[in-house]
Structures are given as C-alpha cells and as structure tokens.
Length: 142
Image (cartoon, rainbow, N blue to C red; front, top):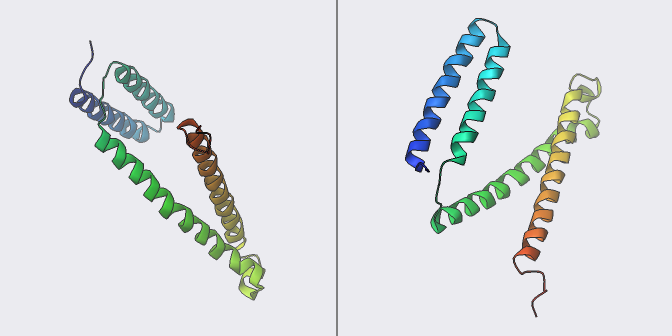
C-alpha cells in the first residue's frame, strides 16, 4: 500500500517539528548526543516512509528542475571564480597591509574557492560527457 505525496509532506512536517523540539531540548540540556540521535532517527524514519511513497513527477516539473540546475550552475560558478580571483589579488599585489600577515586567511580562502570552482567545472564536464554519450550524443549515431 502506497501513500500519496500530500500525506508524505504532512509526515515530513511532523518529523521536522519533532527534530526541532528535540534539538532545542538537547541544546538546553547540553546533550549533543541527544540531538545527533534525533536527527539520525528522523532521517531513518523519513527514508523508510519515502520507500512507501509513490511520488509522480510530470514533464513540466522535470523541465523546471533542469532549468533551475542550469541557472544555478551558470550563476554560482562564475561568482565563486571571480570571488577567488578577488581574494587572491591582494596577496600577489605586494601591498604592505597584506604582506604583514594580518590577512593571510584571504589567500587560503581564495585558493579554496579556486579549487572548488575547478572541481565544479570538472564535475560538470564529466557528467555532461557521460550523459551526452548515454542519451545518444557524441557522434555515435549511425
């Protein structure tokens, strides 16, 4: 017996309220173990309930999800790349303020952002190549 998506959303709200109440109690009691257990039990319960739920997704929703993912990638990747560039400029410009070591974390943060940008581009490229081949692209049609 499968439940519909409306009932599943109600159960999700109930579990979120339960976790929130338990987390606030655990913070007040300084019992972080209680909070961790509450989150894990909530996740396990939602996973079990999700396996019994039959959620249908129409073509319109799939298209919206695809467009949202494309737009998110198109905005996030250049933003984090430009941010890394801006954070790396002061460390290589030779300004006296930045050479004294007061803002050394900016260079580290810029490097992390740069690596994250490259990692994101690499994942996108690999997934695009894989999906293009899987769904008949790449010049393999005969």
